[in-house]
Length: 339
Image (tube, rainbow, N blue to C red; front, side, top):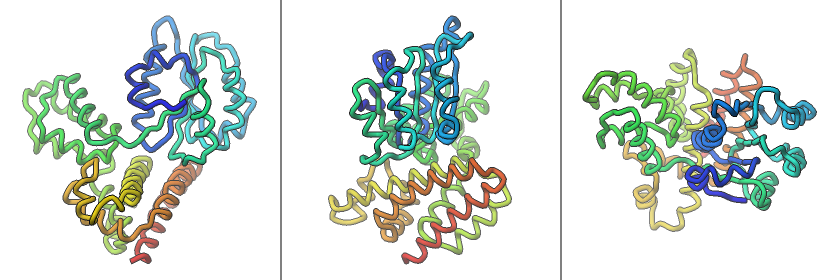
């Protein structure tokens, strides 16, 4: 059964009777929020909630252990939440069996990337009225603005429009980034009655630094010389690979959406101006180049390649940096050939 993300967050108590959740899409922060909403209901002193995290690859390697995790009784916990990461169609047969007799005190939450309409896993969850399918689309400007306002209020921080716009601009449409930076601002603002915008600017870098965003834009534009310059600076430093995969994925999703909607506009300029979430003026020239150089089919292929490359990096940590930058270099070279 399909449920919109805002519905499940507002009325989570109404959906706890279901204990299989498929959360798919590119908004990892939203998936975490939904799972945390489930946890909060059971994470009480007398409930002793047990949290278990598994990757699909681990489950497929040892199915018996997976079944034992679900059906074995716990001596310490009343309820159990099992989070399955990187869920794909490969796990469908197992989920079909479990859906028939999953214990009522066990909640299985599957985190999946982008799933096409033909995905068997997605179709199974959408058509089955006893389990939940929740699309998790990228955050828009309004979503982020609400989160910022709530977080500042909760932390008793003074908020201005200028600060809010800055956080949205640098967020890469990711609520995780926003919350991480607000934690940093909260620590900085301890015992301060006023927040200076210049001080906030010096604090806000979203863990991947502004160069991560420039690096990915240059890559998608096929600007080899600029790409290599930034690559040389970044290669010797510690890279937040997951963050950069998220940034790339969000930018690709934006291009896909614009490609699918381009027939509705008279020209590219009007489409850029009307697109939501807002494209900031400094980025518009690069987005124009990217739209001209990429076609819809190749953009969709990259989404799947992102998931596969991220998995390869996790499985091979000793050479993950080589795998990571080789992936981006291939994208840059391909874009350059388009031009």
